[in-house]
Length: 283
Length: 289
Image (cartoon, rainbow over all chains, first blue to last red; front, side):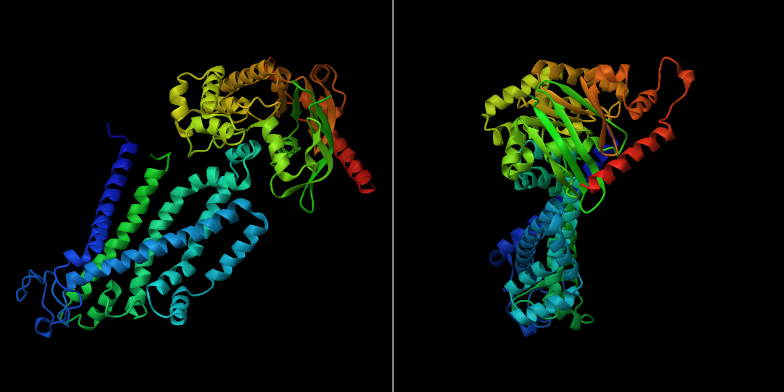
């Protein structure tokens, strides 16, 4: 039988598995980079500069996706770049989520002066232009992985706080919260046991979106040379380098770009798929 | 000695509008008191004040709520919570939002017994099973493992009733427990609540706007208008000889199913004006202390 529900479930399933597959492969590549990358990502060879990818004549065996203007292997650099990208996505995404969701939950459930303080804080925070703010932060903190993570957390926690606050407020008005309070659950207990599970699907979606955003932010900062040292391969750095030789060697730009695109897309689709799994009503 | 005794309770929105004006009422142990009145009369507010779940925008300005001899308003918040949790329960209005959609039915009934009242898991499980049988739910094992959205509204209301009786409370506040249900289901649920109440000897504060419900379930009745108790009487006397003109008008406004051609008799403007004048006079007197 094919009713509407099973259609939805099947579509959500495909989305979930495809995105999980891509991210899983990427994770494996990042972890195993030193062993599976065909070449040393830093090794330069000016005689092998701007080799095209394998299906175009003039390519060299072993340089699957071609080389950049310094003769470095594009595929190996993408694989090594996945390390930075995923590290930033996981660490920055998780910290942002925990900080933002906690503040949002507190504001939305406790209301009163707590909500006042946190909400005004969010309003003020969101008035800063984010790109300028992050560049300023990195300029002060100095470039590096830790600085990027801090910058992402500091800028993006408001996204979580806003949405989770609204959701917690809606849930807080439900009768089951009143019942729990009558039964003698404390405020914190009610928040964690009754409200949190119902806000969780939203948090999961936001978290995966945030991971995608973190990958993009890292790429942007690499692009403007504010990420980690320029020697280490990053997707943003590769895109920045590829831009200068786009007419002679488009592959230096295009392959990291496709990887970046697929990764960010997978993160957001993973979130939607997981939400359907987490939501007891849709499950 | 009544189990719940409310004395001169006043509640208002923070910095303004009064919601309850010096309300007094008693509920004896094992007794059922109905609270009737039109929308906005403050009937739900009384239940919420007793259970300590007033909305954040409302505050209690005076009065006392004696529950089992202890004045709730003088206890510390933690003591109050413990006292209410040990003696009271709520049957909420809307069964669709009164069960947590993320938890299975079983834990929703048992977790509170285990976490807060310190029962063993096995005792709580046995108790939940017995209660589901008592509220006539078939296949208790399946229901205990179900999520709320898998069950019908009537089924959920039965579960809420079972859950309210779980810890053998001495007082249950039923906040319009049948309003959100079908008429056919309403009757069954009402019978169920009345039966459970009688078997367990629980005192019941029954909030409703339906005088028909009152006549079936309640022994005592408080009629509210604009946050004021205008009549406090045994239910039998109320239907025979309502003393307050507003009560009489309210009673006359109940549609008669036996004579459909009679039409509707809304509470006349003159009566409303008279009660408003009464409330205004009361406010003037209260303002002078």
